[in-house]
Image: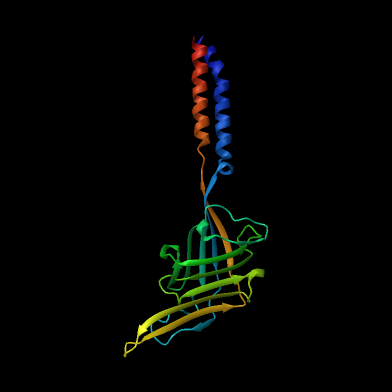
Length: 214
């Protein structure tokens, strides 16, 4: 008699295992996106105008890099998008030892056209430091650029002259007629549906056992 009872619930066990396994395999397609990051890596700077005062910030080994993190993918199709920067979860620009970004409350201007999965195909992105309005950067490329493709950073440092009057030291770095590369990555949030299915399957299995045992 016990063998006969087992025969009744072997089939439900197989079905539960099959559907749970199928859901685990398809889980990536059921995942939500928590954050999408577009990253830019410019080419090394070729033009400089460092101040004679220290610090002299830039060298030929430096380049502009940019990180833009959104809560979802940008619209594709190549249309120009004047992005509301409030939709940004995070942004940061670095060039050598210089950093701008949302962690500092800096201001960002952002116009993009996205026609490829790897990131913007055309862009004009600029930023200004809130702590020093004389410091700024711009990167532009593709058909959106009103000038030739360029990455440029300008950093202003205030100094006090011997007579007490303000002196401003300017460091600039740029690469003209050259655009860098974009890449895109995302952070998924898995939906634990497989666990729910497995739990309901085990409950169903218990019900079958209960009926066959009565």
